[in-house]
Length: 561
Image (cartoon, rainbow, N blue to C red; front, side, top):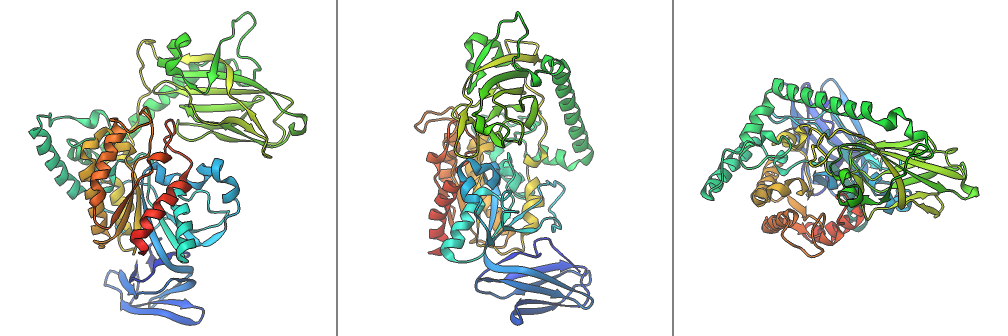
């Protein structure tokens, strides 16, 4: 007998409704029993189908636990411990829902370090797309309790929301995490429905005089109303997908090799220097933070694609020499390798994560040299404004690292200084239509839920005109998938971000918000405004507790009124 990984030790069942227990390869009669010690709380019996599959419905139960769930057939028995009954929430969307608790520690370190709550459970669905049809079940993943050992990879928005549910409602909480960074909403809609919607959108576009023959396969990570069928047909062809992935990997490796082999900082061992300049050279300096697109005195940096080295010296008080510390380097565009006194203390391969690197014991001296190698793939590089830059000495003492840095170009692989030629972009198949619905949503359909939290839209801002109808279609599709037409949903409206004015204007993010506003009247849902919680230069703000508080304030009225 085999069970879905969702039906496993530590799971949370939804209170006050029926719950399906399912499996396969069972023999004969199947009995499912929920036990509180020796006391039977619920018991159901049935018979496995000829193919060994079974589905049994546990009756409605009040919140409680932990309990023991026994599943027995004619030949075997499976015992699942630590099963609770409470409220179960589906988490969906992209990176701002996915971002883990570990990415909030600038704000939450002391609070999170004290958390131990075994009544909050988190299940992360494996992140793999599928394009040839829906997956029936999943057999990877486990339920984890909110302990210090497990907590830090949990969805931050989901966890802080669960804390409020647990505190205010007094029930265990289960979180099923399906969010994937960067996905567009079309990835969460089933094929048949999306193709039908695409046909409707094409007719509307033609009526507006737009060209229906746009081929967005040229831009493999973005697709609009004309490309759904083309992309789906392409993605169903395994040989084409394998060839595309191989070509992407080849181009990426070739480009990175060109940067590494041509970088004078690699051959000259800049990482171990105390200055980037040889005797007789005139030092050049740059201010941190700052994007290099506005660097008038060194304007070539705006179009540089390759690598730049920067260096700063700093002094540490005697009592901290040799001690453990932490380097906080804001956010860097794009990748970085970071060294202190010639020792690499961290690296990040893309632009979005905050740079937070532990400085091990024995690294810090009285006089120290920080060297950062920055690799620039697309757009102007630099250190993002309005971010923290300092050495944290771990006892509320900080050494600021803003100000003047030496800088030197390692290599420029862009042959045209007057025009940027970006790093060859890869094909992110996880973002493509229907793939995440097929493999991350459909296999969950037998689970009973209290509600869904949805935070997405950033990757659809290029195609805001369609978002209203796609948001409605996504909501109705998920409700149909879970056979729950009244499944309650909370949608997070995009916050302030980017090159907008402080007041709401007419940028793409604003237009996407307007589309979200149009969907406000989706039945049994709330739209949560977090505009004021955004930051101009931070796509992934750390203030996820504030987002969760806003979510709970609005959603609880619908859930628990």
